[in-house]
Length: 144
Image (tube, rainbow, N blue to C red; front, side, top):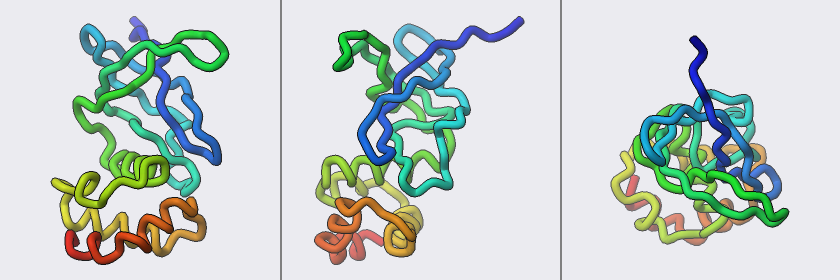
């Protein structure tokens, strides 16, 4: 018997901010596990997403600009694919420009170092991310 899946919208940045529908399976009331999907392009540096493959998330219903309603992933309950963390951090940096401590506290030093190197060495990085790195370089180094 085939597993029943639902479309859950995930916040993406791919040149513009969008919500993209991905397949998810219901875990329990208001909890879904995101399924593997071609939208989760781990190799594309311009594609960032808030939640990714195998993450378990809480959803909430929102009204989109076109008037339609949809279930949107809004809170991480349990991390799935380990590659999702860097995509999630980069999305937050690009859109919110948080203080490094607010976003990196509790993150393993190796992961911070890897994120730092990814930003420095990538052939393309959103300007807001590069600016964030330059402004916060000393703070980030102290956390590595």
